[in-house]
Image (cartoon, rainbow over all chains, first blue to last red):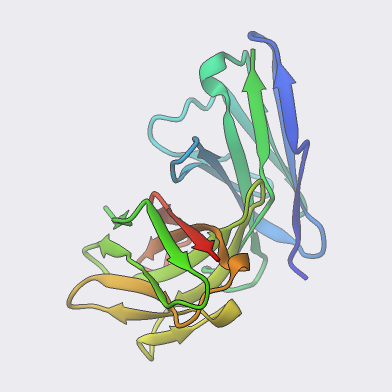
Length: 117
Length: 113
């Protein structure tokens, strides 16, 4: 139980284009989802917190117009990297918090590797 | 603001030997503490967590960790490691019962024959 999927698992896009990454909770409902970014050999950095039906809360230094987050349902959140540049290349990981569960319970997706050429 | 320090970026160890992965945190309020494992090209899997109560926490795969408030530490231990334990291990903290996690930089555990 508590499985989170991400699609695609990897994507290559050209500089200036946009790419959308999906995060789905497969067997549970998630009122809150989190988006992280992980650079090689580094830790996960929280980018934003998204709550179903409301605007995402972005961490300091994260451009909300560049990283668009939509949490349209209790099982799906999307991250769109707009006008991607090579410096946006990274490993993006989402996590989902079980609706009605303990605040400490986050289930992580397998990640999406984005390469911008 | 909370922060997490994992002093060892890499820990090599022979199979069946014991291992300790160190984690120290900084926070001005009460915290929840977590250890996650990440296998190559996969997401994070929760090993164990400390919320309250007993300071010795047992997790999956034979791992355990001890919360030491005076030393602000939450070191991860396993008495006998296996090749399959080779992975990246992340310590994380959430402050004041909130749901935002702050991660350490990770420790690469490499188990050798």
